[in-house]
Image (tube, rainbow, N blue to C red):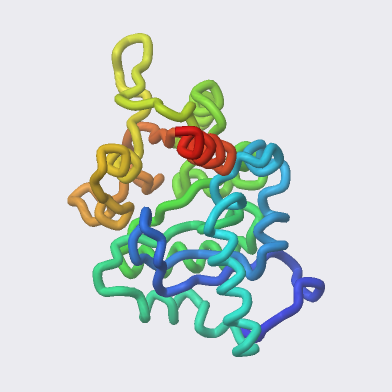
Length: 244
């Protein structure tokens, strides 16, 4: 799998890193795209990307994507980022693979994505990932990834179409979200809830439980919500800190 310039590709190819320094996910294999331009192209049409509220495109994943691209360019090879190599080199405590750190798998090469998922399952890893394009380009990922939704109404639509959903909700939202009949509609991401309470709990720890990762779409469960932590919200918090 040699290093290829963008113009020679037939699609958006993926790269799998064996380890990650992401504090929220923990040290787990992580799927990236080949470069930042591809990551941006894969997200065009997503409301969060288009209006500048996406946490990934406005945060540290951009640095990680650049590092992956530069490493492959220096080596003139993507071999170290092939899924089998990455899984073989993963940390012994890893119990999940992240799809994707930045970019949307729905717009990536289907063969590569399916191979990565197949190898991850073979290795006994939970697959944790989200697609904003569950209604269009990502229909083939139902049961594999969670539907990334902008609000509760969008999530209900995804549920009706057979998807489990993740939802971006207003900053400050806590507790369990319930339907009119009292049944559970969505629960807060455990890692974010722990951080809010001054504790640490990673996605990998969630995946290490008997149930497996809460955001593993192949398993039944409630929707999962994330209080807004995108660049707009981070800037708001920074300004409040400065004012205080």
